[in-house]
Length: 326
Image 1 (cartoon, one colour):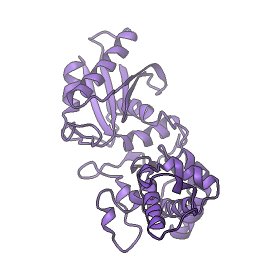
Image 2 (image 1 turned 135 degrees about the vertical axis):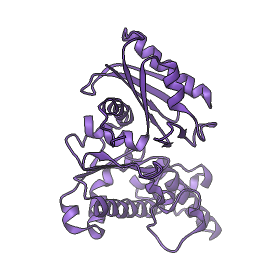
Image 3 (image 1 turned 90 degrees about the vertical axis):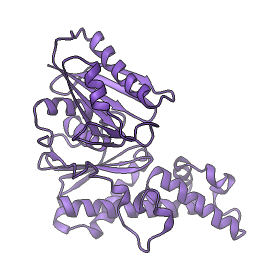
């Protein structure tokens, strides 16, 4: 049996042949370079073929392929919705790869599922049966492993935590991506900075923040973190709110699911890793007290590879018929 893991990101596709222990045997990466629709599917098939060729794997060998996608993977059909890839509203990814790779069993999962499985197999949550991976990047999502099983839900949308309701009253600005994500994702942090700078400009206040040297719409989350490190009051206000929301959201997850560990990853963790202790203290205010005392908050040990190792784990577990009993 041969195991392949494919991690589809926003700008590149990473793939690897895996040993049954989920260690990498051979690895390849290709850039998307603006490809859309079926061109992206073709690139995934191409990297699979390259890995098999380089590994000397014959067509008649049985292959298990796990694919991690940044969106929703529909388990019943194998189709996917990926908002950052034009033409992938209901794309038949599983069928396409199955047709192009002989003797293959293809399983497609969301990046949230891959991240938690990657951490459990090769990262911070190794050995855990109950763990949650909170991914904070452009958006916010959570991979949830309870009693050794990844949760998926009725339509495979479990973990869309960016939509958590954490702050009344409701604001129209949350329509696009939810309350939590609008304040505490990378995009949300930049959006809040732009709003604060516009308020200062409208009030005729200058020299309040180093961020005022930038155009509001050009401010990035990285700019906010850099300003925070300089003691900037606007950056502090924005990131204090983000810390509060990361803590509240994690507290809700701890109270609901009683995990052993909450792992924070994604592009924002990263620079926000230094706030994990503060996030835990915030969570202690809100969470079920026994559950939070028994839970550890940690940073990912696979900052660049959780999705790839998770895809390998998906391939291995799917061939063992053990991935959520699907």
